[in-house]
Image (cartoon, rainbow over all chains, first blue to last red; front, side, top):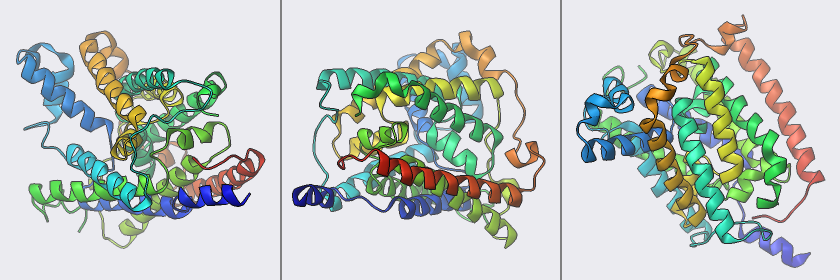
Length: 178
Length: 196
């Protein structure tokens, strides 16, 4: 028992309700400063649009996806709010990792599966999440969390669809986590 | 007064710099709360670790209340704050696909960057997947454009849709969240496990 208490102590995280209040204050600051919420998938979209446009300049004319992006965004897609915010996320996470002593290269997975299986599922999950975030106009941050804070109907619907689906399929993926 | 950048009280470059500062705080809070661990995140779907539910709903409620009070005090003009538009079909279908990605990959886009920042290789692979998924959506855009644009409802607030004032809806949401927090504490006692 003593040893397991030590283990818990070493990996101690912030109290979740305090973490939630701080997260809410960060989101409030984003809305107060910039009139918009937090986000993540939008920065990935900026990256994809930049690469596609560089590789194939004609895509500005013949890709509906790039065209749609360019119509709603002017200027360099990498010089946008979400790209700078996500660079900050990398820095902020890294700083917290230093303080907590959690910096470590590793594949995290249940002892019931191999690293390779974990990585294959992570890749597949990423593809699905990336695709879904475009269809849903934002991910858990941009659509669900930020949408809920401004009482957006779509934000609440997307939040329920994300968590409801994951919960419904949890049984089939239980070996990967427990 | 607020939002500062929309009211042109700060320049575009200051806005981008503050985006970086806000992102740094975002990443720091996510990592400190344990959102860099996929097994901790996935716990919410099995009851052994409800940190996602607690942090997520406390965060949403704090920001929502903050905005309502800021608006009441005249500190922020809510008409200038971006409200996500509602395209009913894609909100649901996109959410379902994201939910599958979540239980399969263990991360969402924001948390995967957070995990990658402290060296989680599974998070880095998840991010590669994100780029592939967004590219796939872009490559086949013409095929799903109709679904992407279907059932556009404008940018309604959920309070309006339910016929409630913002304040009453906020109060109901807080009561629902308190009920969920109570259930979350119960679940963690029922399905105990070591800390990841």
